[in-house]
Image (cartoon, rainbow, N blue to C red):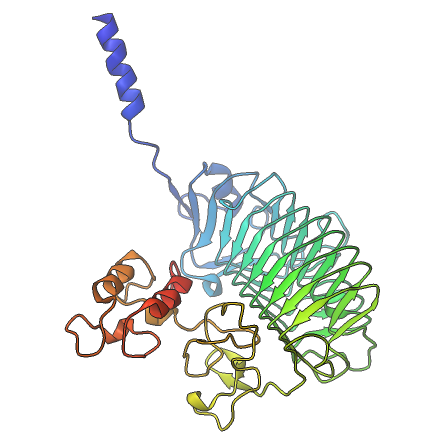
Length: 428
């Protein structure tokens, strides 16, 4: 009997359901954000209700190594962490990995006067969290205003970093072997006096930088993107345009120095003053299929031609295209490296996808709402099943669903699935 009970207890232990991840609501379940983090266990989600969070335990926030998600309930625009110039936003310095997620919040007026925290908005030291769909606004002071990485490899995806000001690097700075993935961010309206306003790299950093827009930034004695001491970033489909430095001197909009060897592909650098890339201080860039003002001969496939930017639904850096209703085609359309893939999204004001050879420069995301076929507010498996029922069908086939024909070519095929996959998981 004792043996049988032991076997039954063992079976109960082995087949008992796993612990269910909890949702902890702030301020409903816990009064402050830090209290919510402290109460969370691995896999839990801390959900921040809409509103403005101020005061102790709503700034200087520490994930403490936990694999948890901290996110807003209704998006970054409605959830504001106001540091009031008295502290920083978040720190990740206990070995956090990609399952430590910060998503959909605004961090504003974060400030540090010294170097205890290197990044006023978010600091990552020896950690690799996921930082997604956030807004960092008016964060400054110290070494870096926005996101600082030291020996870190976070995913920095879909954020807006704006209106930050500091002496050195107001947006993103990487140091000491950092290799973050930096994708789909918009960085604008930032000011530095002696550094890089958009992205700075120092000491053996190798970030992957894909499909980011740097515009409206100002710098003195610096650049928009800068690197020193053996950095080797990969930069693909980025646009650096509309940045100014009136009454200031500058190395260039992309500054490559001291043994750095970046790869730049399908990028646009088009600003009013100066050259696009400066590598006269020991840099060794490889540049292919880029539109660089005054430097059209810098590498194979490169041009020096006005990209003909036009304004569209989400900003001012779409590419003029006759098919989208403009009077001329941008020279950057279909001018990217034919051996590379489009980053997804669109350069067209009408939201049409980038097909064929990739367009140069930043691509706006505009198809998420189109891919939400069931209107649930999220691009998910239900939408995928709708595509599956129509896959392979063309116009005239009773299975054909025009809403799933994203590129409007009359057949639901692999191109539509590729567009859908780019937005899978997106929240509308």
